[in-house]
Image 1 (cartoon, rainbow, N blue to C red):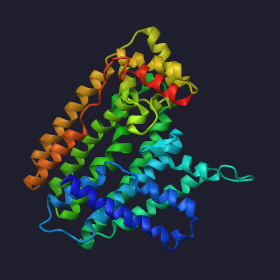
Image 2: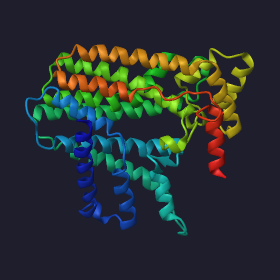
Image 3: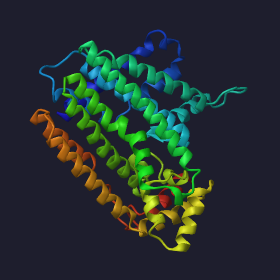
Image 4: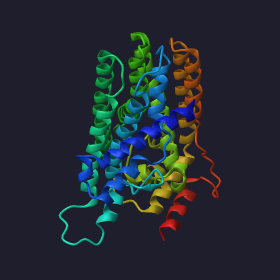
Length: 369
């Protein structure tokens, strides 16, 4: 079932890439157009699209025209967010390739007298992808009432995501001592949970004709899954190798983000370690060596174990709620299995030759030389 959905979504994404051969997108110069269309077609988990399709099929009595096209539109929404996210984080990698602004800079390289940079073009491209997402999402052939209700969720989701990004950035200005787990989870919910889990499930269920109780339940389910997913992403940032996950290592630490891992370490380390942690988290410009040192402090605090237990708790809560919905059993079981597989905790081995924080930074430094 998962492979079938991915094939269908990828097919629609290829068709959307063909839009660059038609006005107004055809006015974009060929090299720049190819970068954008190739970015849209990059391989990914198709997580949001999958949840939307499962949400729909779990309640619909029959298939519907343009289901996969609307599902693929959520990938465009994801791309829009990623383009802007990479600008904020100054990240150069995305999904195993160049971030949009990096790719645009490469095309501009060598041109003199430019009044703009790749990041300016990437900002515009992100906005274009959002417009394309809305346009394609509306293609699903369900009743106007259901389509309108699903669209309202989609646009509200974009607003929540923007607020989450803004909230996260502004919280880098706040002292770590003032940050609480409740604040961190609010950022996780708004930045990640809504558009990654809750909204795709809710939109699919709305389009499929689910009752109000189940639609409300999927909002809560998506919130728990989204929190667990973001915790997993935090662990990957600390323990994952950049070339394995398609993004630079320790970027959250470099950006001073107040994650659950950082919060836990702050409250479970020595005074001397806390001082080093604060210097990196609250002051910009940390060196790779300082990042590595703080990553080890977080590792030794037991933050990874705490985060893993929290992930398991959130997943278990979501599974219980899924089991109580009226979703068709086949799709309910698939959703539980899919979420469980997706939210497996990453390897947090402290073996210096494997995935320890110091090994991750050492690998990054070697690659940069």
